[in-house]
Length: 141
Ligand code: T46
Image (cartoon, rainbow, N blue to C red):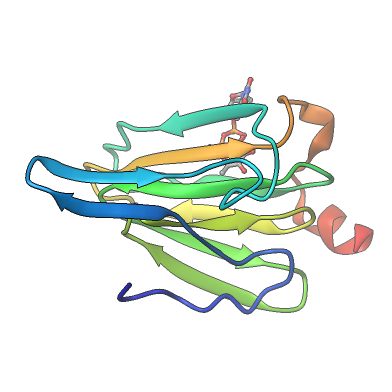
């Protein structure tokens, strides 16, 4: 698999999916809970129509929720910060995702017009699980 980035921040990493490209009619990419996806999926959401080009999403960390973010189409930049190390990853391949583990500040920008993002999570939405202030995030580490 080419262009597989190395992740150096804590509570993250690359999640590789099973990939079949031997069909004449397109690709098939598979994730399974407890196998490539290291938790039981309780929720998923996708983000599309990022037309403005100047959008910034994220800018928060989660206290307990674990997620994996995928770029299903197009591309975007994912910025990760564990409080000590920072890393930016170009997301442009649906065959792999990035783990957004607990206490990992992250935001996304530089979206292509055709970008479609999928996120799978191990818990339901709870606003109380979000840390949306960076100083608060640093203090809680
Ligand atoms: C994350 C990044 C990658 C819900 O009601 N339920 C949900 O499951 C989600 C994800 C959001 N919401 C509400 C909360 C806000 O009122 O939708 C609104 C927009 O959410 P937010 O500003 O957090 O969206 P993003 O794109 O900045 O962040 C999202 C996820 O919220 C977050 O967990 O890690 O994508």
